[in-house]
Structures are given as structure tokens and as C-alpha cells.
Length: 133
Image (tube, rainbow, N blue to C red; front, side, top):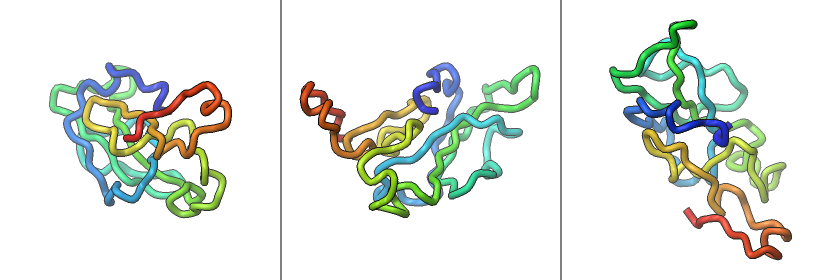
């Protein structure tokens, strides 16, 4: 989940590769996957679709235990807001969701008003707002 990704885990990122336009996406899910390579499109074994991934610099070292590299993968499930605007996430987002416009190499990204949906009654009552983007 995005909240669990630490800056040191993505310190060797070189580039974020988007497989489709992110302009119409309110959020994407992000995860850290153990992959065999630093670069190239990783295999994808989840439901839904991969919308992007990170590549690593040549200075990134593989795990001593597994020989794999930690790389971010960005994805969406069939029931996410882009496919079902009136579905489960019509006014919220999954915990690992972040606004794709806030993502860059070595930057985890964050939720915005757009990615999280409208503020809850409790947020409004407390005067809490999320950044616009």
C-alpha cells in the first residue's frame, strides 16, 4: 500500500512509465513488487490492468536473499472508479490509491481531493481538506 512505501525503498527509481494516459484517472493503485529486472514492462498477475510501472537506475542492487528488485507497479481493478463511476468507489478510493499526477520517480505520491472523492461529513465538520492535486 502507498502508505507503507518508504522513500528509501524507491530511492533508485529512474523513470515512471505510463502505459495509458493518466489524465482521465482520478486515482491509481500502487504497490511494490519483487521483480527480476530493473527495467522493462513487468509481468502482471492481478485482476484488472497495469497502467504504469517504475524503472530503476543501474545503481539499484538486487536483494541478497531473493535476487529480485523492488519496483512500483500502478494498476486498477475492474470495479475501480474509471470503469464503474457509480460503483463501490464512486465517492471514495482504496487505501493504496493515489492521484497519478502526484507520482514521479523517487516520490511516493499522495491522495488528493480528486483521488479520494468528496470530503466526508466528519472532514467537513473538522475543516479538513485534501490538496486539489
